[in-house]
Amino acid sequence: MILTPSELPKVNSPDFQALKHWPCNIPSARDCRWNKYLQPSDVCGELQISRRKLHFSSLTVVDYRTDMRTQQRNFFYLAIVFYLSTSAPAEDAQIRLMDPDKSGSTQCYGRVEIYHNNSWGTVCDDDWNLNDAEVVCRQLDCGPALEATRSAQFGEGSGEIWLDNVACSGWESSLIMCNHRGFGTHNCGHDEDAGVICSGIRVAGSQSVLCSGRVEIYHKNSWGTVCDHSWDLNDAEVVCRQLDCGPALEATQSSHFGKGTGQIWLDDVSCSGRESSLTECQHGGFGTHNCTHSRDAGVICSGAPIRLAGSGSTQCSGRVEMYYQKRWGTVCDDGWDLNDAEVVCRQLDCGMALSALQSAHFGEGKGDILLDNVACSGNESSLTECQHRGFRMRDCKHHEDAGVICSDSIIPVLRCVFLPLILLLENIALHFYYKVIKKQKSDKKENDETDVSRAEEVEAEEEAVQEIE
Image 1 (cartoon, rainbow, N blue to C red):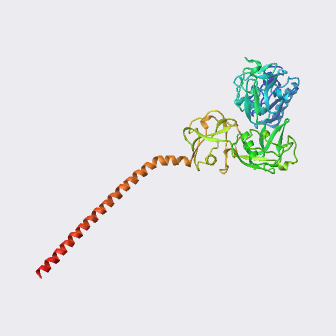
Image 2 (image 1 turned 45 degrees about the horizontal axis):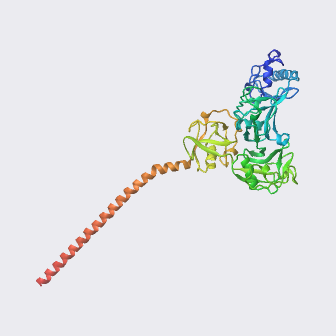
Image 3 (image 1 turned 60 degrees about the vertical axis):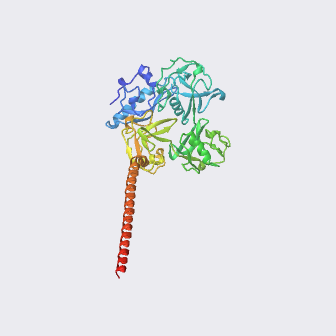
């Protein structure tokens, strides 16, 4: 497809204005409101809007059927439109968190405010939940959401209430991509202002996975590492709990997951293991340390909790579900095989895997589909250590939910089916045994009686002979 100037929207047209309120950061132009002008086979990229101009970043031409000349022409037309839009208003996707106790904007917790129509406004807490908070925390790069606060927990805002009845699925990259009633449409007062509390922690680095990696915390608008001085399993336990990653298995030291960059925010951390966040533990103060990044601390957690559920499920057989960010979700069966099932069975301490089931064998789940294209070697200690597309990156429906049957699930069946049979056979055997013993005793008695009679006869014969003599 070749874009021509006549096919592009005018800068002040309704289509162009709608485009500004619908960032295209999903890798398909079909997901943008501009699909009237661009098809998925033409371009994909992330739409970014700043105060003075609108532009594409990470633009990729993916229609390999066209030649380079056509691709260059498409890019040229796009550049013209974005250049002409330098007077566009400020981005609506800007977001911030406010806390009156901290005299203004905070890092990863506070009242949610968004920028629209050249002014900041709040969000009403009608239907506000953890999915919505998850989107806010991701948009601010603040780690997983811990809580979605309501009733102006972080104080009442002022001015406009821009959004109400926000309904996110949890995977959106911007709050305005979620369903809502429309900007400025609400039935709230500022006593219903919504807020969030984000974890402000993450794991990163080479060989890192969801629940294992170099520990990094968010402070003063930037991510930084933790020094490994006195770093132990109690400290790791707090991190794993904060990440919803189960118990800690190991507290790694000496940049086990590679050296970080930027600030080293914490040193001499000393946790009891019961704290709800790492910053609640004793430490030397933010930015106070005598370390280099060669001593960056890390954690290895047991992994996101998993369970087996569904129709006909048992403790060791069923639909695979994972607990991630305060809710349960399923796993898609794309690429699901016995190696993946082996990891699940091991993680649940259910013996070895007997079967990796597909097509919602134990019924369709609900909620998020958390993993897709899982590719385990079979030696991993948890499912999150296996290769996969990333959390919530999937092209599945719940009719493709994956399941497993582990060997330990057969033992109760064997016990229920064969134990009565074994008992029956045992009773039969005992019956015949006692019958044989009884017969043997009877035969012995008869033999004894016969022997006595014979002895008496012999004795009588001997007496008769003596009398004749």
